[in-house]
Length: 222
Image (cartoon, rainbow, N blue to C red):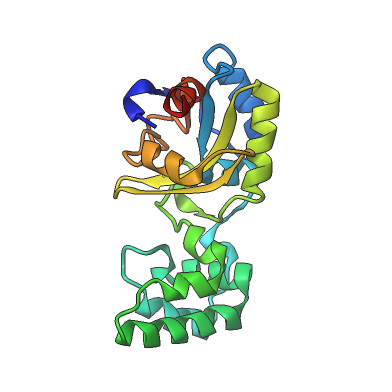
């Protein structure tokens, strides 16, 4: 699909909290923008926050193992802190994370990277440590969202759009689609969103509408 035939339109919202329903928010702010040929994409951290999947570091009690394992994570990683590592252990199991770390370190010795996150479970890769998301939640650890496919289906049904997606995108040219409504191609959406059109900080644009996606898709097919 030619990206030039579509348009990415960020939608500005107020600060969203765990008291909000993400589907209702998207309908409220996007009903006059979203059309039947469009895809609604929403930042995964905002979905997680509205689901209440947040915890303050002081609510966690890092164990000795969390303190040790966090030392083996590069400083830019969310699990490099005691608290981020403990959050991953709480979500995926202490011994699963430990096993993943041991195997991952051995794999690196033979030139294979990424094994730790493949074995440690989805939350180990999705957790955002403090400062990793928008204020006022930059003082919280944010877990990955629950049932992103289901959230996408709810958005599609409520807005009457072509489709919806929950995306994890950053400024380092990393785009992962965590969930989609039925029939969408996650890899295609990743390529479209790779330049990170979301703004989760002062911009407050955690929703991005991919305008005319269905029309561009039909043009390519036919």
